Image 1 (cartoon, rainbow, N blue to C red):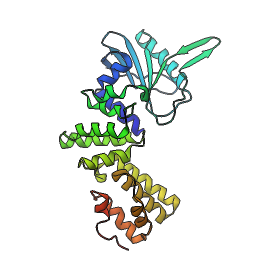
Image 2 (image 1 turned 90 degrees about the horizontal axis):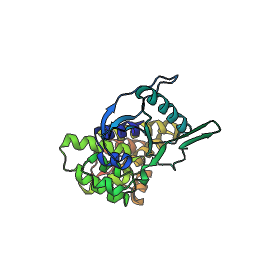
Image 3 (image 1 turned 90 degrees about the vertical axis):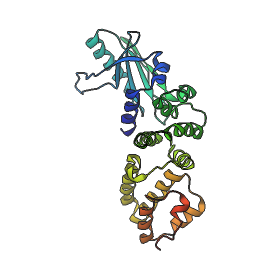
Image 4 (image 1 turned 30 degrees about the vertical axis):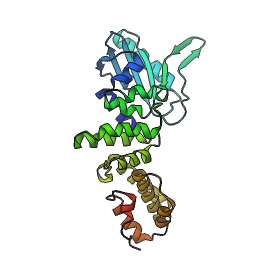
Length: 278
Protein backbone atom coordinates (compact mmCIF):
# COMPACT_ATOMS: atom_id res chain seq x y z
CA UNK A 1 0.00 0.00 0.00
CA UNK A 2 2.97 2.32 0.53
CA UNK A 3 3.62 2.26 -3.21
CA UNK A 4 -0.01 2.90 -4.19
CA UNK A 5 -0.43 5.87 -1.87
CA UNK A 6 2.77 7.54 -3.08
CA UNK A 7 1.91 6.99 -6.74
CA UNK A 8 -1.60 8.40 -6.31
CA UNK A 9 -0.25 11.49 -4.57
CA UNK A 10 2.20 12.14 -7.40
CA UNK A 11 -0.29 11.68 -10.23
CA UNK A 12 -2.89 13.78 -8.44
CA UNK A 13 -0.36 16.57 -7.80
CA UNK A 14 0.68 16.61 -11.43
CA UNK A 15 2.55 14.34 -13.84
CA UNK A 16 1.57 16.03 -17.12
CA UNK A 17 4.01 14.19 -19.37
CA UNK A 18 2.84 10.78 -18.12
CA UNK A 19 -0.81 11.68 -18.67
CA UNK A 20 0.02 12.76 -22.24
CA UNK A 21 1.89 9.53 -22.92
CA UNK A 22 -0.99 7.45 -21.60
CA UNK A 23 -4.01 9.35 -22.92
CA UNK A 24 -2.66 11.90 -25.40
CA UNK A 25 -3.94 14.83 -23.34
CA UNK A 26 -4.29 16.31 -19.86
CA UNK A 27 -7.08 15.72 -17.33
CA UNK A 28 -9.35 18.77 -17.09
CA UNK A 29 -11.17 17.69 -13.93
CA UNK A 30 -10.66 14.79 -11.52
CA UNK A 31 -13.84 13.24 -10.15
CA UNK A 32 -14.30 11.69 -6.71
CA UNK A 33 -16.17 8.45 -7.28
CA UNK A 34 -17.27 5.66 -4.94
CA UNK A 35 -19.10 2.84 -6.66
CA UNK A 36 -22.03 0.96 -5.09
CA UNK A 37 -21.12 -2.70 -4.80
CA UNK A 38 -21.21 -5.66 -2.45
CA UNK A 39 -17.59 -4.72 -1.87
CA UNK A 40 -17.21 -0.93 -1.96
CA UNK A 41 -14.71 0.11 -4.61
CA UNK A 42 -13.11 3.48 -5.16
CA UNK A 43 -11.39 3.86 -8.55
CA UNK A 44 -7.95 5.48 -8.50
CA UNK A 45 -8.55 8.21 -11.09
CA UNK A 46 -11.68 9.19 -12.98
CA UNK A 47 -11.41 12.36 -15.05
CA UNK A 48 -12.86 14.47 -17.80
CA UNK A 49 -10.06 15.14 -20.27
CA UNK A 50 -9.40 18.45 -22.02
CA UNK A 51 -11.05 17.13 -25.20
CA UNK A 52 -14.21 16.18 -23.29
CA UNK A 53 -13.37 12.45 -23.28
CA UNK A 54 -14.07 10.41 -20.14
CA UNK A 55 -11.19 8.35 -18.68
CA UNK A 56 -10.57 5.90 -15.85
CA UNK A 57 -7.02 5.05 -14.72
CA UNK A 58 -6.11 2.31 -12.25
CA UNK A 59 -2.61 1.81 -10.86
CA UNK A 60 -1.29 -1.61 -9.88
CA UNK A 61 1.94 -2.52 -8.12
CA UNK A 62 1.14 -6.24 -8.13
CA UNK A 63 -0.61 -8.74 -10.39
CA UNK A 64 -4.32 -9.12 -9.69
CA UNK A 65 -5.73 -12.36 -11.07
CA UNK A 66 -9.20 -10.79 -11.23
CA UNK A 67 -8.22 -7.44 -12.72
CA UNK A 68 -10.35 -7.89 -15.85
CA UNK A 69 -13.46 -8.43 -13.71
CA UNK A 70 -12.66 -5.41 -11.56
CA UNK A 71 -12.36 -3.29 -14.71
CA UNK A 72 -15.66 -4.63 -16.03
CA UNK A 73 -17.32 -3.69 -12.75
CA UNK A 74 -15.82 -0.20 -12.94
CA UNK A 75 -16.93 0.12 -16.57
CA UNK A 76 -20.50 -0.84 -15.70
CA UNK A 77 -20.93 1.60 -12.82
CA UNK A 78 -19.06 4.53 -14.39
CA UNK A 79 -21.16 4.20 -17.54
CA UNK A 80 -24.34 4.13 -15.45
CA UNK A 81 -23.29 7.12 -13.31
CA UNK A 82 -22.09 9.41 -16.11
CA UNK A 83 -23.81 8.01 -19.20
CA UNK A 84 -20.47 7.77 -21.03
CA UNK A 85 -18.34 4.63 -21.58
CA UNK A 86 -14.95 5.29 -19.97
CA UNK A 87 -11.59 4.91 -21.68
CA UNK A 88 -9.94 2.45 -19.28
CA UNK A 89 -6.22 2.04 -18.65
CA UNK A 90 -4.41 0.05 -15.96
CA UNK A 91 -0.86 1.32 -15.38
CA UNK A 92 1.36 -1.41 -13.94
CA UNK A 93 4.32 -0.40 -11.74
CA UNK A 94 5.20 -3.77 -10.23
CA UNK A 95 8.58 -5.47 -10.14
CA UNK A 96 7.26 -8.86 -11.29
CA UNK A 97 6.54 -9.67 -14.93
CA UNK A 98 3.12 -8.38 -15.95
CA UNK A 99 0.72 -11.30 -16.27
CA UNK A 100 -2.74 -9.75 -15.85
CA UNK A 101 -5.35 -10.38 -18.56
CA UNK A 102 -6.64 -7.34 -20.44
CA UNK A 103 -9.80 -8.93 -21.80
CA UNK A 104 -12.74 -11.24 -21.12
CA UNK A 105 -13.75 -13.60 -23.92
CA UNK A 106 -16.84 -15.64 -23.10
CA UNK A 107 -19.43 -16.97 -25.55
CA UNK A 108 -21.87 -14.24 -24.48
CA UNK A 109 -19.47 -11.57 -23.19
CA UNK A 110 -16.54 -9.77 -24.79
CA UNK A 111 -14.77 -7.02 -22.85
CA UNK A 112 -11.41 -5.34 -23.30
CA UNK A 113 -9.35 -2.61 -21.65
CA UNK A 114 -5.73 -1.45 -21.87
CA UNK A 115 -2.84 -2.46 -19.59
CA UNK A 116 0.44 -0.56 -19.83
CA UNK A 117 3.61 -1.63 -18.04
CA UNK A 118 5.40 1.59 -17.07
CA UNK A 119 8.65 -0.06 -18.15
CA UNK A 120 7.32 0.28 -21.71
CA UNK A 121 6.76 4.02 -21.30
CA UNK A 122 9.49 6.24 -22.73
CA UNK A 123 11.69 7.03 -19.76
CA UNK A 124 13.53 9.88 -21.46
CA UNK A 125 10.24 11.69 -22.10
CA UNK A 126 9.46 11.57 -18.38
CA UNK A 127 12.97 12.46 -17.22
CA UNK A 128 13.04 15.58 -19.42
CA UNK A 129 9.63 16.80 -18.22
CA UNK A 130 9.41 20.02 -16.26
CA UNK A 131 7.41 18.15 -13.59
CA UNK A 132 9.33 16.46 -10.80
CA UNK A 133 6.52 13.91 -10.49
CA UNK A 134 7.14 12.87 -14.10
CA UNK A 135 10.87 12.68 -13.48
CA UNK A 136 10.52 10.46 -10.40
CA UNK A 137 8.10 8.18 -12.27
CA UNK A 138 10.70 8.05 -15.05
CA UNK A 139 12.92 6.11 -12.65
CA UNK A 140 10.38 3.26 -12.90
CA UNK A 141 10.17 3.27 -16.68
CA UNK A 142 12.62 2.21 -19.39
CA UNK A 143 14.97 4.96 -18.26
CA UNK A 144 18.54 4.31 -19.49
CA UNK A 145 20.56 2.94 -16.62
CA UNK A 146 19.08 3.04 -13.14
CA UNK A 147 21.98 5.02 -11.70
CA UNK A 148 21.75 7.67 -14.42
CA UNK A 149 18.00 8.10 -13.92
CA UNK A 150 18.45 8.39 -10.14
CA UNK A 151 21.30 10.86 -10.61
CA UNK A 152 19.19 13.13 -12.80
CA UNK A 153 16.25 13.11 -10.40
CA UNK A 154 18.40 13.75 -7.33
CA UNK A 155 20.14 16.67 -9.06
CA UNK A 156 16.75 18.41 -9.23
CA UNK A 157 15.69 17.43 -5.71
CA UNK A 158 18.97 18.76 -4.31
CA UNK A 159 18.03 22.31 -5.34
CA UNK A 160 14.70 22.30 -3.47
CA UNK A 161 14.05 23.98 -0.10
CA UNK A 162 14.73 21.61 2.80
CA UNK A 163 11.08 20.81 3.57
CA UNK A 164 10.29 20.01 -0.07
CA UNK A 165 13.53 18.06 -0.43
CA UNK A 166 12.57 15.89 2.53
CA UNK A 167 9.13 15.15 1.05
CA UNK A 168 10.54 14.15 -2.34
CA UNK A 169 13.26 11.98 -0.83
CA UNK A 170 10.57 10.12 1.09
CA UNK A 171 8.62 9.59 -2.13
CA UNK A 172 11.52 8.19 -4.11
CA UNK A 173 12.58 5.93 -1.25
CA UNK A 174 9.00 4.67 -0.95
CA UNK A 175 9.02 3.79 -4.66
CA UNK A 176 12.58 2.46 -4.69
CA UNK A 177 11.46 -0.96 -3.52
CA UNK A 178 9.58 -1.48 -6.79
CA UNK A 179 12.91 -1.63 -8.62
CA UNK A 180 15.29 -2.62 -5.82
CA UNK A 181 16.85 0.83 -6.19
CA UNK A 182 17.43 1.68 -2.52
CA UNK A 183 21.22 1.08 -2.61
CA UNK A 184 21.57 3.07 -5.85
CA UNK A 185 19.65 6.01 -4.42
CA UNK A 186 21.66 5.92 -1.20
CA UNK A 187 24.94 5.78 -3.14
CA UNK A 188 24.06 8.62 -5.50
CA UNK A 189 22.65 10.74 -2.66
CA UNK A 190 25.90 10.23 -0.75
CA UNK A 191 27.94 11.38 -3.77
CA UNK A 192 25.84 14.56 -3.93
CA UNK A 193 26.05 15.10 -0.16
CA UNK A 194 22.29 14.71 0.17
CA UNK A 195 21.37 13.46 3.62
CA UNK A 196 19.09 10.44 3.87
CA UNK A 197 18.43 10.62 7.60
CA UNK A 198 16.90 7.33 8.72
CA UNK A 199 15.40 8.92 11.84
CA UNK A 200 13.10 11.18 9.80
CA UNK A 201 12.42 8.94 6.83
CA UNK A 202 9.21 6.88 6.80
CA UNK A 203 10.69 4.33 4.41
CA UNK A 204 13.63 3.57 6.70
CA UNK A 205 11.37 3.50 9.75
CA UNK A 206 9.15 0.88 8.09
CA UNK A 207 12.17 -1.16 7.00
CA UNK A 208 13.64 -0.96 10.50
CA UNK A 209 10.36 -2.05 12.12
CA UNK A 210 10.11 -4.97 9.68
CA UNK A 211 13.70 -5.91 10.40
CA UNK A 212 13.01 -6.02 14.13
CA UNK A 213 10.05 -8.34 13.56
CA UNK A 214 12.23 -10.57 11.37
CA UNK A 215 14.80 -10.58 14.13
CA UNK A 216 12.38 -12.23 16.53
CA UNK A 217 11.86 -14.99 13.98
CA UNK A 218 15.52 -15.57 13.14
CA UNK A 219 17.01 -15.24 16.59
CA UNK A 220 17.95 -12.11 18.51
CA UNK A 221 21.60 -11.67 17.50
CA UNK A 222 21.17 -12.83 13.91
CA UNK A 223 18.11 -10.64 13.49
CA UNK A 224 19.88 -7.54 14.83
CA UNK A 225 22.84 -8.14 12.53
CA UNK A 226 20.47 -8.47 9.54
CA UNK A 227 18.82 -5.14 10.43
CA UNK A 228 22.17 -3.34 10.66
CA UNK A 229 23.38 -4.81 7.36
CA UNK A 230 20.14 -3.97 5.55
CA UNK A 231 20.08 -0.37 6.76
CA UNK A 232 23.76 0.22 5.97
CA UNK A 233 23.31 -1.25 2.48
CA UNK A 234 20.26 0.91 1.87
CA UNK A 235 22.09 4.04 2.95
CA UNK A 236 25.56 3.44 1.51
CA UNK A 237 25.24 0.72 -1.14
CA UNK A 238 26.54 -2.84 -1.25
CA UNK A 239 28.76 -3.61 1.73
CA UNK A 240 32.39 -4.56 0.99
CA UNK A 241 33.75 -7.79 2.40
CA UNK A 242 35.78 -6.03 5.08
CA UNK A 243 32.61 -4.36 6.45
CA UNK A 244 30.68 -7.63 6.52
CA UNK A 245 33.55 -9.34 8.34
CA UNK A 246 33.63 -6.64 10.98
CA UNK A 247 29.89 -6.80 11.47
CA UNK A 248 29.83 -10.59 11.73
CA UNK A 249 32.34 -10.47 14.60
CA UNK A 250 30.23 -8.18 16.78
CA UNK A 251 28.74 -9.46 20.01
CA UNK A 252 25.36 -8.43 21.49
CA UNK A 253 26.64 -5.24 23.16
CA UNK A 254 28.45 -4.13 19.99
CA UNK A 255 25.34 -4.77 17.90
CA UNK A 256 23.30 -2.54 20.21
CA UNK A 257 25.92 0.18 19.71
CA UNK A 258 25.86 -0.42 15.94
CA UNK A 259 22.07 0.02 15.82
CA UNK A 260 22.42 3.44 17.44
CA UNK A 261 25.34 4.51 15.24
CA UNK A 262 23.68 3.46 11.97
CA UNK A 263 21.10 6.21 12.58
CA UNK A 264 23.67 9.01 12.55
CA UNK A 265 26.62 7.81 10.44
CA UNK A 266 27.15 9.94 7.33
CA UNK A 267 29.34 7.40 5.50
CA UNK A 268 30.27 3.74 5.91
CA UNK A 269 33.77 4.81 6.95
CA UNK A 270 32.24 7.11 9.56
CA UNK A 271 30.21 4.20 10.92
CA UNK A 272 33.42 2.22 11.56
CA UNK A 273 35.55 5.26 12.48
CA UNK A 274 35.50 4.45 16.20
CA UNK A 275 35.60 0.94 17.65
CA UNK A 276 32.18 -0.50 18.36
CA UNK A 277 31.78 -1.88 21.86
CA UNK A 278 33.17 -5.39 21.79
